[in-house]
Image (cartoon, rainbow, N blue to C red):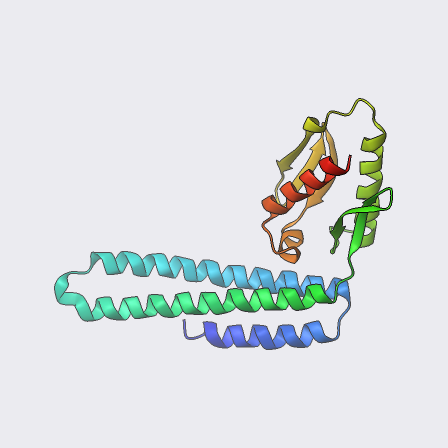
Length: 196
């Protein structure tokens, strides 16, 4: 546990250096790495918190001092988690402020913006491809809007129509938009339906 605070400081200092002189893709990759590292630390701390809670509940009255020590450690872990989450949120906001938004459009009306790449597609390419697919849906006179659905794949939430994937929503998309993947996918689905 004593190693977690220096690790957090190193992560914050490293991320500040990384984000100050890199392009958008590198910033997003760095943000993704910071997010993954933070998630691993939070998971490890979560397991320790569960272990401490179980120990606290099993102690007898004559073990009050040990119980108090365990409760103090539990509070310290919770404080560190709070600092980590705030740091990740701050770094995300700083990166987002410097990222170019690429609009998904239908007839020059912006439906929503794409900020990051997925796989080999840049954010600009993603926005363009999604826009083309939405235009194709708009042109389909037999389209049933209820056939637009969200499915969950291994790492993404996909907005689909039949067997065709209209777009994918990654965890990083959610992070950049300060929403969960599921919430963002639902927001995008609603925006697409309203635009058509």
